[in-house]
Length: 230
Image (cartoon, rainbow, N blue to C red; front, side, top):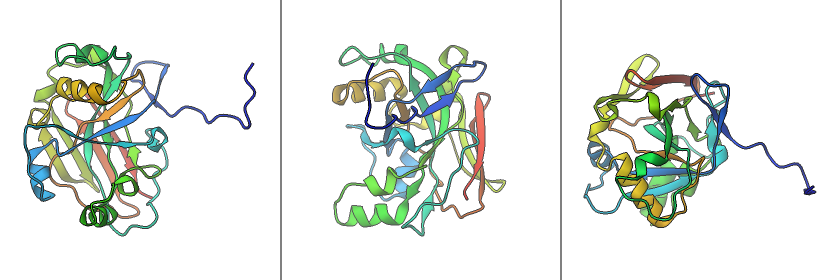
């Protein structure tokens, strides 16, 4: 029996719709600039070259109903609603675009919370974005729906409301890189594992959140969740 210096933290996890089991989170990969209109509003060009990736720590996940405090050291917290892809199998090296969907356990919706002011400062100085993206409670997410229960994914609309007002929406077909393409590219860089989550990028309409704001996000006909910034 292994003896630890202190008790290991419980694995971050998300509920699964229709199941008592939970999904343990291994890593969180995020895709930047994957909706052309969002890239434009951020002043970036979109090209069908190599996707932009960054990461959040696994324990940045906030399961439905969890506490989402307004983070420290920012006056400009932004929402970025995203499709979440959850992997249920390890990849055997680099996976092809065609084989990649077989790794997918299920789908959800997440919000990539961003300290926009800190991100802008980092960009200006050509520094990493870690403090702008990878802070505590920065990845609220829904329960997962098994992939076997999902049809016509690209045609479905991703959306986010804040205090009852629609702020972001776009069909998932607007993504520059699809799920298979993103998993293929990620597998060139990382050993993809069961438990990995991929936040697939956000549509245009990102904007600030304030303490007390309530949000509701979803993918039409599949899943939705809600929460509040404290």
